[in-house]
Image (cartoon, rainbow, N blue to C red; front, side, top):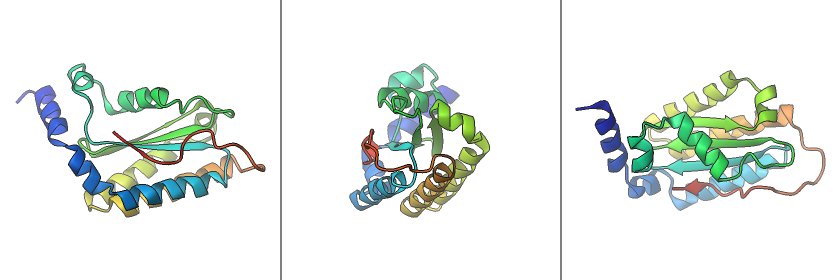
Length: 167
């Protein structure tokens, strides 16, 4: 089977129901709370987006995971924060992969090796079916790194919603 067709088939089979099983309401609630708590310790803004499968047109065009994450980073306005410190954690269940996209200030201070480690730990946890624990552990890692480089400096507005997005 052609690789593109196989990929489209994999995404088509990855249904919203599978996404809800991997990320049920209590997990989504815990993720939102972890983001809220973490943002009290640093000046960055986190968004977490879970997608069960990419849209057909994106797949047909050959869009990769990184490209999709960057498109969602723009679509959800994660780039548009006061300190240019937005961070997106993008989870694609069909690909069983995670991408982290950062705004320019974060990218200048934190090396991609750090983000790649977070992604690897998440995907390893997901492979064991530990979506809840792996995601919360990753958020703890991300918040710790962001706190080191962008410590909170008093009260500030919450610029992006903390609740995860499931598409």
